[in-house]
Image (cartoon, rainbow, N blue to C red):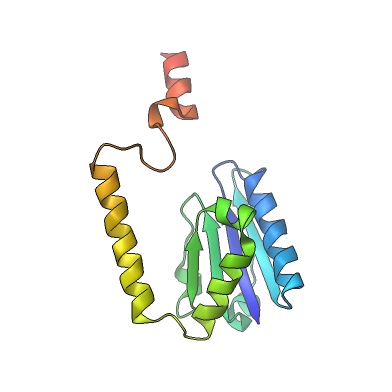
Length: 147
């Protein structure tokens, strides 16, 4: 199968590159073709052509930032955080294969809805949200440093 992917993290220096390389290597190992666009603070690298997008069976977006998805309209889409492409690219590619084959069943949808509901309940219960404590993030530290 043929895929296109976009990897993106806030800085676009390390994780985006690692995710792109992992997706490319894993796709090759599994016998698939993939074109990967890397987005970050330094702009876009290996921008996806409209021909590559048209030829793709599915799209993988592994990003921790906002990625414009209009150019992928009518394509099966798999979205995940960039760390998933770094740690388990095979699972992302397998999900993309399932989406391209139309195997996303209503059971998957109900499982996703249940998981989203559980995430919401966890977030509302006062437990730390995914991503950790925002007061310890880079921007919060910079704000305290400069104020």
